Image: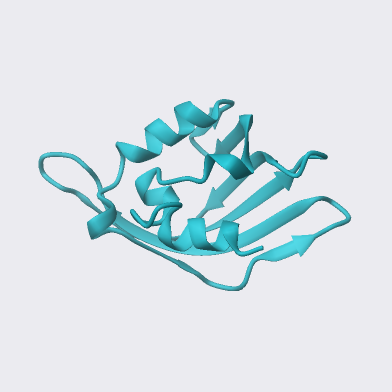
Length: 121
């Protein structure tokens, strides 16, 4: 299924990569999905989506996959390596230089993503 790849690159409805736009396909995540990164730990899909939608200007931000998604059925995980750069939605429009990250999705027994953990350089 190409849903995670499409959401990462284009967003669920084409508004831009979901990390940069909040345009996330809520049908593939558990409502209580845990979202972890070095600065946040959120256990609510709606709160995470809201936070993403107000952070970056998706028209002035980019994300690309550094390699195809890696699926590990034994651990029920999907891993993505990304490079992103972006402009924040602030009046002075600060630009964040390119950074690389690794995202690991843990899939629950119901087939929904129950945890998304992200590390970046």
